[in-house]
Structures are given as C-alpha cells and as structure tokens.
Amino acid sequence: MLMRYLPWFIILALVAEILGTVGGFGSSVYFVPVASYFMDFQSVLGVTALFHLSSNVTKIGFFRKGIDRHLLLYLGIPAVVFVVLGGVLSRFANPRYLGLSLGIFLIAFSVLFLVHKTLRIRATKKNAITGGVVSGLMAGLLGTGGAIRGATMAAFRLKKDIFIATSATIDLGIDLSRSVVYFYNGYVHQHDLYLIPILIVVSLVGTYAGKRILEKISQKKFQQNVLLLLLFIGLITLVVHLFGLQIDPGGSAGEVALGS
Image (cartoon, rainbow, N blue to C red; front, top):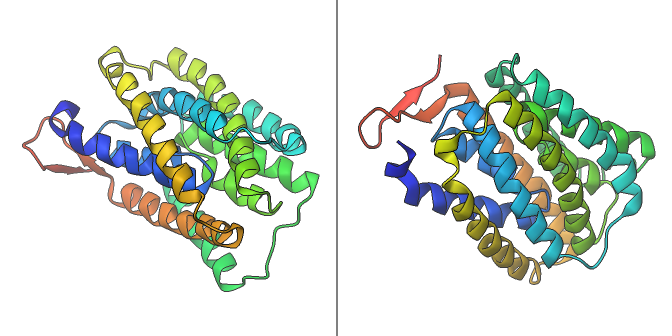
C-alpha cells in the first residue's frame, strides 16, 4: 500500500509544490507524474484535484498583489468549461497515449523557445482562448494542464506575482469543477482521504518556500525557469507514460510494475 512509501511520497509532493510555485503554473504538473508512480491513474486524478484546491488557495493568499482580469476572462473561462468535458472523457480515454502526447509536446515547445529566445507566442485573445481550451481539456483528462496554461501565459510577459496569482485563480476554478466530475466518476476514494490533511500542510510549506526562492529570482530568470521546468515536466511525463512506471502496491518494497 502507499503507506509503505508515504515518507517518499510526501517529500516528492513537497518538491512538486515548490517547483510548481517557482514555475508559476501549479504543482499538478509535477505531482501527477509523482503520484502516478504510487497509485492507479484514477486515484491520482481524484487526489490531485483535492490537493490542488488547497494549493491554489494558498498561492492566492501568498501572491495577492494582482490578477490579470483579461486572462481570467479569455483563458480562465474556457479552461473551466473544457475541464468538465475532459473529466467526463477521462473515463473513456487511454491516459498512456494522452500522457505521451503531452510529454512530446512540452519537450518540443520548451526546446523551441529555449533555442530561439526571441520567438514569442502572440499575446492575443485568440491564443488565450485556445490555451484555455487545451489546458482545461488536458487538466480534465490527465489531471494536469498547468504547463500548457503556463506556456500560453508566458506570451503575455506578466510580472511574477501577477502570473502566479492569475494562474492560481484559474486553477482554482478548474479544480472546483473537475473535483465534482471526479467524485461522480468514482475517482475520489475513501481510503485516500487521509492524504488530504497531509497535502494541505505540504501546500502551505511548499508555497512559502517557493515564494522565498522567487524573491531572489529576476523577471528574466523567472521566464527562463518556466521553459526549463516545462522541459523537465515533459521528460518526466514522457518517461512515466512510456514505461508505465508505477510502484506495485502488492509487491515487495521497491518493486516497480511496468504498465502494458
């Protein structure tokens, strides 16, 4: 059972929360690959949605200096609408193929913009809406759409605090919507609920630590970090779904099951 690996799970969740805060697009992009290693994918979706609710409330509290209302409208509303559709479709979709596609996309996207530093996504309403639709759909299907939302928001070159507060506010709406869908899908299991208070503490500690790190990072460095973290997320996502890495709860300590 997960209890056997709980200390490792907590440490990795804390790292995910810190990196998600520093990157500006939430912890789920790291937490989903980590949690997928310890539990079945449907449980991951349920736990991630509940964990992310507390995580986003914490971020809004720590980074409350401003929210970009235009992005909240043009990116946030499509994301909230399409996360519901993604949550419904998650019962029928193959998460492995979706995860592979997401990993490949994030690797290609981040490498392209790291190599061509002057290349930019145009900061238009159309691109904001498209980013909201895709990120919401991926959040519902895979449990994480923050990387795509972060990539879209990076085009608008927001200040660090506004970037994180806006992303967290959009994420909060996404998580509220998909939590309801996941609950009716049966993804929220009673035997996993003991993790919620633990992860609330993780979100508080991780967000505070991430905020302190961000205070020492320049705006230019912050934008570069977003791309580097997107590349890292893409690699982790690709490896986890390519090899189907997951700890076998019924096996001996350290045993890993490979998905078909």
